[in-house]
Image 1 (cartoon, one colour):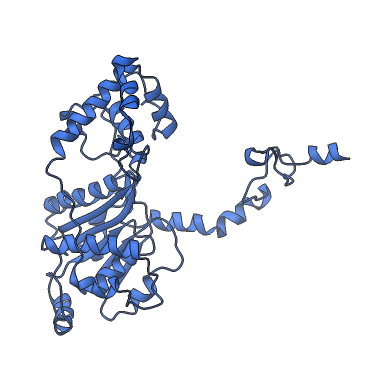
Image 2: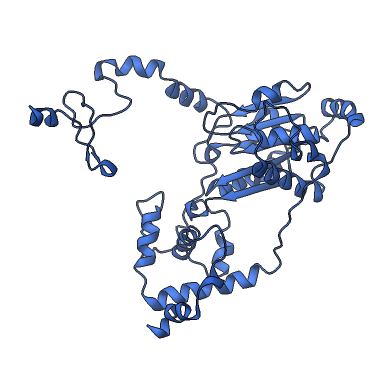
Length: 366
């Protein structure tokens, strides 16, 4: 009896529990598939599937252009031994790791030496810039609407991004007396910049921007659907125009967004994961070039991006391959560097290593 029950179970092995899945699969299937739709019901399911409807609706939008910001591999570069480049759109972490492990000791330390040399060459003039503007005081003190999620870490990060934009003159602080004048200027002129938030998520970076700087036109770019969004709070603001674009940044032709044309805009993004930073830069800069060619008065006034997840970056998407090539960094070394970024992300533990360990790590000691 027990043997018969085991035969009727799903054949998917659950490693953590050291057993097969306990669910029963559909007839003529070895695995439980979720969501499961019978073949005779597939047609009716596709007609009402919300995901299919969303994809079909997106494909008809004028700003949808498949892969317009994706970038491409350098066809003139011959693939080297190590990470395979042909036949793969995405180089996985496993592929990056295997390529690094395939290096011998001298090749590995040669790569490390090149990385340290390039870092010393280009990073000396880069300084931390942590700015908390007075305009964000209400948020910093936690005096915002109780319905707005408040996390001190995220608020400080968002405020510093806006503070640096203010430091560069991209944002201008306004007081209560200027708000009425700002609304009139927004309606009668193009001097007030719009805001395009890439990877907007729930949109609370834009919420702070609207609360503290009186921005009146907002575009939120996000491919996923979220609950508890800031949209409801933003739409309650008088004279603020909000438009959410549910689209992958890779497929967004920003110059084709009709309501953004002939407007200056600020591009922002917090925690743009991996290649999303490159997709955003290519989206904005391609928009600039297109605007110059078409004579459309739509231009980028400023840009602020907080990056993350560098281990997910891809050579195909990277926007400045020529610069890395000029530094002597090849495609294979780029992928190795991105894989190295996941090794230690919380602190510099170099001082904790003893001289003995350091000696053992040197190639001449092996």
